[in-house]
Image (cartoon, rainbow, N blue to C red; front, side, top):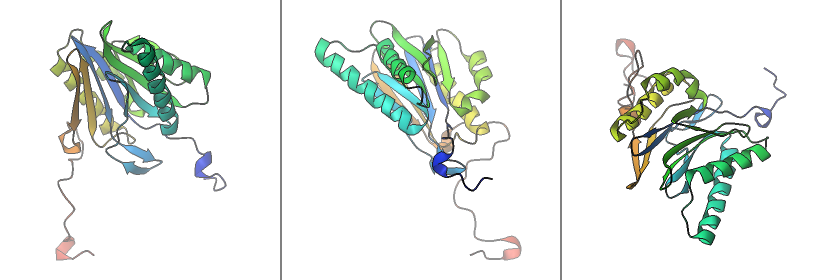
Amino acid sequence: MDRSSSHAEAAPSTGTTLVACVYNGGVVLGADGRVSIGNYITNRASNKIAPLADSIFLCRSGSAPDTQIVSDNVRHYLAQMTAESGEEPTVQMAAKLAQMISYNNKHLMAAMLVVGWDKHEGGSVYGAPIGGTLSKEKWSTDGSGSTYIWGFCDSEFRDNMTREEAEQWAINALALAMARDASSGGSVRIITCNAEGVHHRYVWGHEVPQALDDLPYPSGPPPLGGPAGMVLG
């Protein structure tokens, strides 16, 4: 290892898993809760979903400061446009703004999903990966854990899923990614947007489905007794 290189010079971690999909009546988005610096886990219940408007959200992966500045600017511009026009912003409008900021600032390491519901198009999912590309999809995933679940998401997604099916699809996808990706883990946040409003769901770590051969979620601190009755500590 080159000891002359500092942490500031190292490439930023992009560890996370984001998923989103449309269903018959709305859209579901979700993210894991783990934040890490290298091999050190700093937070297991972080919120990686930033609100842009009442029913529009930005799922963030990549460099945390970069994605934060994008979400702050998009939220500011959308609020200005709403105040001037009196109309609620659309998901496409928010996605275009995020793309423009990312494309015009190529140094930003921001891999994002812009997801939400509006009265014009219903539920929408836009993928906005690093570099400024924008793609409208029926479902999308990003972050380091996404590489493990593309096949699952593709095979298990179906058109016209119910809300319950879409939410379970998102939870299962995140659980599989968390089981294989060391940079994804902790808890799960799920947000559902539809004509009735925005619905939040929090899945605790011990409630996340366990994949095959996973270590069970710890039920408490380890026992003090060691081998042959030896007392540790």
